[in-house]
Length: 567
Ligand SMILES: *[C@@H]1O[C@H](CO)[C@@H](O)[C@H](O)[C@H]1NC(C)=O
Ligand SMILES: *[C@@H]1O[C@H](CO)[C@@H](O)[C@H](O)[C@H]1NC(C)=O
Ligand SMILES: *[C@@H]1O[C@H](CO)[C@@H](O)[C@H](O)[C@H]1NC(C)=O
Ligand SMILES: *[C@@H]1O[C@H](CO)[C@@H](O)[C@H](O)[C@H]1NC(C)=O
Image (cartoon, rainbow, N blue to C red; front, side, top):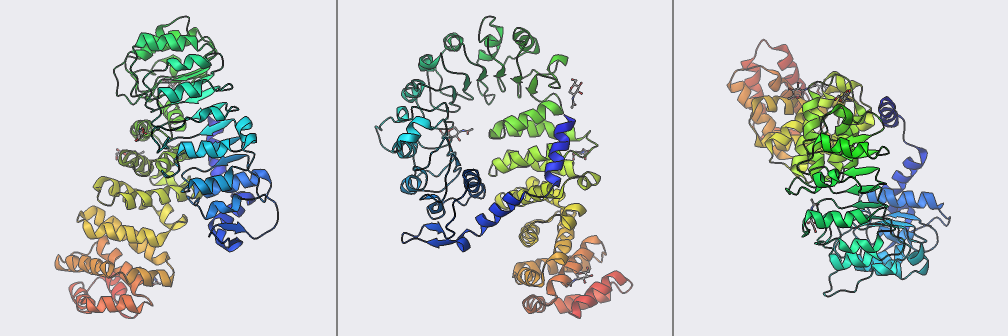
């Protein structure tokens, strides 16, 4: 909606809140504010007590920056901090550190997605279960992408958390027996068992009078017939959200069969069948017409979503690929699911042909997908192509600087992670080669220059070479004297730039590549004895004499050559 668009643009364009600035500063300079205990863990020096919301936000900020480890989580020991909604995503911590730092807090929520493999789900739950208050009051637990246990056989433990209302346990080797234990939790209302090893969902009948939300995306091991699955689902009368989406891998007719049921799931307001075969607009429409309070239907990577009824513009939201509204919904909902992110980005790219307006809200969704799947090549490829089209020429001018800074950071990460992938590097270079980004946006120009140089050393493509040296010459002019010196001190960089000058001189061709290369060399040698030594040792002086002789009438070349020689 237009309000969404204005919202995203405004949020990105306004300054960070004072709280965020403080938390980011504290997080990145944590050691300065701490002393070390005997065991090496950190302890805040200030004696004050943090308000609970601020403590939660601090923990979340540290998790976001990947800074949670045995040492840093030490600041959450004792009574200085009070946590309630704890996020320790991707923490690298031991079971002991987890227990000491987190299990004495009155936790209502814990998100432990993707913490390192040395700490198991069993460790986490027995830690939490050691606190009576948590046992009864922890409501929401997220254990995605973890290991259940290293013991075999292990002790089942979920039943200890009797207050649990919502459990998410995706991408885990989690079996039927575990499901049976979870389904008997007395207050369970919401369950996400996507991509687990469950073969039979009959155990869910134990919570049929409580369960309101069931997400079972890509249940790859399920060994039930469609009729058997539907018989269980039919009993879950209180469900208002059901997700049976898949990665397009199976030919099951479950989605179509479900849509054809007339008397099933009367309270449903949200149904996701993305990635399922045999889904038709007609069946979806008939299903929704019988349930007028439906608010969402997921149709990405199906053949449906194209009818007038399903545009996703009004009360009923639709994720799909038919138009921008549906694609945006898909990117929003599926940011954690790499396959769907890729699908949505792929379709977004084909839409960018006709986009004429700046769309910060769409670019922001691309950024989220990119950030969540840094090592997934198909996602990074599709995302970098979208970034280029969404920020091309005039479009970049309307993008908030902060958003462009996030984009640039992620493009550089992608270049770093996939150094040998031609198309990805090309997409990233094309996106970086923008006046707006190179001139106005804050990012690590030193790292960027190094990455681009590394690319340049391994590739010969003339157009890309011109772009790469253009980027380097602009970056070099914006670096501090120390940074240019540091960059020029990398021998390979000077050699490569001289190599390009030599090539152009031999070809007797004065072009932009030569001009940009000479500028970069000028900037890099300025006030840097090491770079100058590399320059001289690699026959730079002789080469530059030849340049002067070869292009006697080119004043722009002469100016750069003489500029360098006089530095
Ligand atoms: C599914 O879960 C397994 C672990 O059980 C994991 O290795 C795999 O990457 C997950 N698949 C996806 C698409 O996340
Ligand atoms: C989505 O598609 C419908 C027609 O199928 C159209 O009326 C609507 O304007 C489209 N929305 C956008 C944002 O393109
Ligand atoms: C997006 O990229 C494609 C392929 O490079 C191009 O054909 C199209 O014109 C681009 N669209 C915009 C808006 O730049
Ligand atoms: C960098 O190069 C440009 C010419 O391309 C020149 O105008 C500028 O003075 C140089 N800066 C330094 C610090 O050498």
